[in-house]
Image 1 (cartoon, helix red, strand yellow):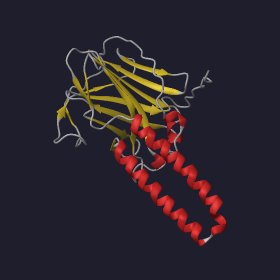
Image 2 (cartoon, rainbow, N blue to C red):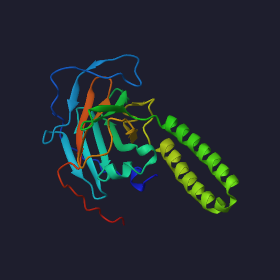
Image 3 (cartoon, rainbow, N blue to C red):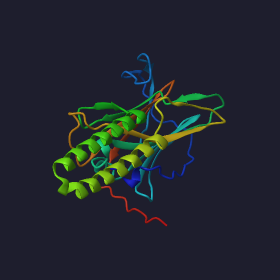
Image 4 (tube, helix red, strand yellow):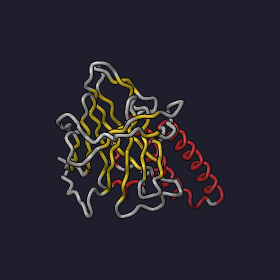
Length: 254
């Protein structure tokens, strides 16, 4: 089921100092990239609470935002404070996060090489973000199957026609909305080129939670979102909620 909070939020960008977040002193071996032909040895820069250029904010509309500011790149991660609950009511129980990248350099960079999510409290299961086109095709196939099954049930028992037809229409409407969302508000796995004339990329990334090692959510979950660029990996560790018992009082929309 599509939840309203999954739609594109209005981001208010925060200008901060040049990032000096802790850079790991060792190179890490990245897992097999979904959009790369081979493994790469890349250094990693990690968001660290309190470090210059590393910002955490709670927004009035009920989101948490983590920001990393570098010499020519700013990466922002936005997650709904109620994402753990909402993900369990979304199609395929997908976990959603919103990423924004702003390039301030004078050449160009490719974004993204890959985006992955580490489910820290669930055996460190690492999931790549779902391809929106593949998700759309999967959901459309499920809609076709739902239509066939509904017609079969009605043929066997015409008395349930109205009830089954009403349920099917709701399912089709929600599926159509989600397919539209996937086509317009998600990050394209093919990536894009950022340059002075085209400095920003943003959109939702969705991660599967169907892995048997993930299971039910705990009261507090820890994650590490990794954004692969050409020269380094940007790592944003985050927890939901960020602190025990953390609650955001959502401001009513105008």
